[in-house]
Every structure is written in structure tokens, then in C-alpha cells.
Length: 346
Ligand SMILES: Nc1ncnc2c1ncn2[C@@H]1O[C@H](COP(=O)(O)OP(=O)(O)OP(=O)(O)O)[C@@H](O)[C@H]1O
Image (cartoon, rainbow, N blue to C red; front, top):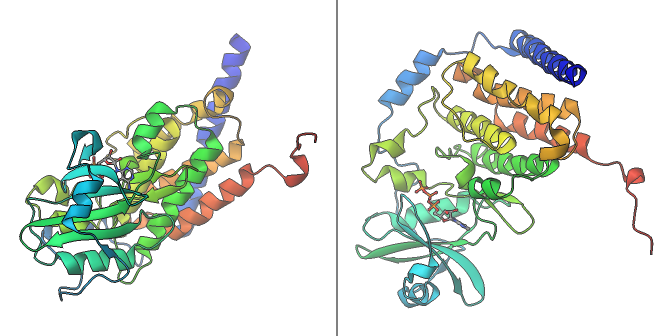
């Protein structure tokens, strides 16, 4: 028993040493001093950013490729806004599940909020968020000054945060695949021109379909929510970054929650980040019980990605292209070679 403990502690120290070494090598090699701005510059940018910036074209246009549902269709789909169909209360309004025809949908009712540019916002949102890892906006229902409703595809396994609580036995490989799906969704948003930031990315903004494919929800919603006079929403993530680096930071926290099953803590320095990421070493020693087997180098690569997402100053953070590439490598590393798959006998 003592020997086992000593081995576990030695393994833990070995991993810490490797991570620190890799991290410092990375910093020396990759830090772009010329183009870097320090954190206080970025903080100032966040402070002076106008609160109600609109990120979508202002001219009114009819949303293309979206279905316009009637008030009656929405009323029937929600069983007359029956409490049994109510699945949550979001910042935007009440959220219902229901069926329109035979299509399962999620209906977000923005009643009470008045967006004079609703149609152009919806149009913009839909055109920018068409990706297999982004929850699909299928339609809307709108009458100026009276009601506004967004209709999304329904993802049967709900949000990742709740799913993790009920499925602690999700394997390492499944978690990597969820992480990769979510990363690709964010990568798509960030690579748009101009880039679209999610701004409220976290585990409850990632939905899962029946096959555990991850899709980001509320992409492009920040424009809507900025108009709601609740200060908390605007700079939900004041972790010292602006533009896409805020989402990248959130993605680092998302990974920590996904792989530890614990809610993210407040991390205010690189030291805090090291300490929490270090906790992942327990996954190494407990691998069989909690998350199935996986290779140690995959865990180390994952910890490196987390560190590079969470690092201060924000200008040193990686972008989502790098995150996707690195997660793909981990996924391939965890793949069972074809010749090792034993097929059941006929
Ligand atoms: N497309 C979807 N498929 C399945 N469930 C969904 C979908 N969209 C939202 N939900 C669920 O509906 C509930 C409300 O979601 P919503 O995103 O509107 O608000 P929230 O995340 O609870 O809060 P916030 O307003 O801060 O975003 C959550 O339980 C969420 O998981």
C-alpha cells in the first residue's frame, strides 16, 4: 500500500515537472513580444467598450432560410404554454420544449422584451450560425411590439452541465469528443468575418444530441441580451480579455469542468491555474474507475491546452484553430487501431 502511494506521488510529481517544462518552453518559443499588449491594456478596452454595441447590420430584412411560425403554431406546440412544457427560464425569457408538426423544438419566448430590429438580428444570427456544432435556429414568430419568439432544434440530451452531473462515468474518450465538437463550434464563430464572440460560453451553453454530438447554444444571442438592462450579462466574464480571448478563457474553464466534473473556480493568476489543472493528475491515478483507460500523454496534452486557454495575459492565449488541432491529435491518439478491434463472432 505504502509502495503504491509512493508510486502515485512520484507519478504526480513527474507530470507536474513535465507540464512546467513544456509550459516554459512554449512561453519562450511562442511569446510574440512585439505584438503583445499587456493585460491592463485589455482590461481598459473592456471597460471602455460601449455597453450596447450592436453587432449585426441595422437595416431591416426578412430572415432567409428560416420558417416564420404563426402565434397559433407556437401556442399549440407549447400546449398553450403549459407548465409541463416549460424547461427553463433563461435571460431572454421562458423556454419551452414542444412539437411543431413532428419536429421537436425548443421555443424561447422573448415576450416582455422589445427588439425593434428583431428580424434583422434573427437574420444575422441564422446566417452566421449554420454549423454542425452550433444549435440550429429553425424559425421565429414575431409581431412588432407584441411578441417575439425564437424556435431552435431540440437536443435530446440537454445541456452538458446537467448531463455531467448525471453521468459521472462518461469516458475520457467521450469527453474528448464532446470537447472537440464544442471547440469546432467556437472555431466557426471566431473565424467568421467579422468574428462572432459567444461571450457566455460554458458547459450549460453546450447541448448534446442523442449521439453525444456537442452543439453550442445561444450563438449570436449576445446582441439581443445586451439590450436587456442587466449589467451582469454584459461582462459576465471579466477575466481580463476582450474579443475572442474571453471565449478562449471560457473554453479553458469548460475543459476543466468537463474533465474533472467540478464547477469552475475563480482563477485570478497563473498560479491558481496551475494548481487546479494539477488536480487532473488524479484522473491519471483513478483512470479505470472514473473515466476508463486513456494514455498519459493525452492527459498531458489536454492539460497543456487548458493552460494555453487560461493563461494571463490574455494576448498569449491560443486561438480556437490551435485548440481544435490539438484536440484532434488527442482524439487520434486515443483511437483503437483497427487491427486491434476484436469483432464478435458470427
Ligand atoms: N436546443 C435545446 N435543446 C434542449 N434543451 C435546451 C435547448 N436550448 C436550451 N435548452 C435548455 O433550456 C433551459 C433554458 O436554457 P437557456 O439557455 O435559455 O437559459 P439558461 O442557460 O438556463 O440561462 P441563461 O439565460 O443565463 O442563458 C436549459 O435547461 C437548457 O439546457
